[in-house]
Image 1 (cartoon, rainbow, N blue to C red):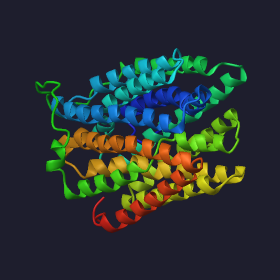
Image 2: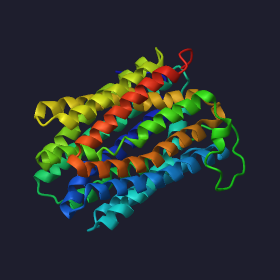
Image 3: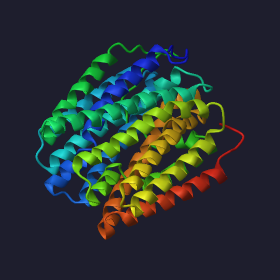
Image 4: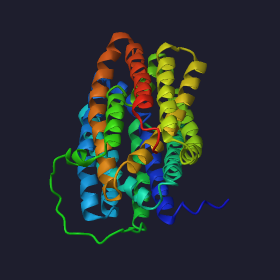
Length: 391
């Protein structure tokens, strides 16, 4: 079946690279909390490591977004970002303590922060506002297909008695292949690049000239991010209920299959209706997911929760980026996306620490219920504040 015309060579190549990178990342991610639990690391320490890594990612996101817009180029930031992330992932294969995990995650997130605003802006550069939801949805589906293949590979390697560290080293291979593919990426310049320097600017400079609609989006998603801890915690919740390591990965695999199958169709739907309603549905799906994870202790409840979690991502990830881009001037796309990601990443650190501390109370029940309640509140706020006449 032929792809739609709006799926250009650049979009297809960026999606392929994301697929390969996610094979690498998602091979490692479901194993990481199991690896750290093996070390004896407490949930609060896991939350701190993920939170600090997100702070580093946040700093790079606002810098990268500004630099990319100033230079009017995207490819160098995408290329170096993926390369640095690959180095960080490789460190997991040789570390033996939590300090090494912290270094690995920090370097990986540094690379992610460097590439993300430029990559998302490059996707936006290669489509129109009428096809933006579909393009972001297509990219997300490809990205998540990698997140399906990654855990499958991890399960296969575990079946052959590979250690966690050996699996981490295998995960570097698809990341390296994706980096090679980026050399075939062509820059789609909309204007001649100007001389610029890698300067440190006020991270909130864009906020002063942003639209009121953008600021409302930032506030609601910021509140949500403050109580949306890392996905590592819902994997840890399975382990708290006595589920075996390999079975935990199967649940995570199921979540990614749901997301991969639904992200692109939801993106297409988003271009045909007000994106507001899809985001509200997504936030309530998140609330229901975390409620089920908190109160459930049976396999069918966890299966339902992971299914809903995949739908939550499908309804919010690409749609939120499309909304953000549609609220700003075309020349500020990377800055808008960078600041949006920066604020979320900063608050994710707080979320990781909050979740880690609350986790100690009752093995995650309170932490998950608090996240569910805040997600529901954000859904209501979005319903009240979002401008129904636009986007």
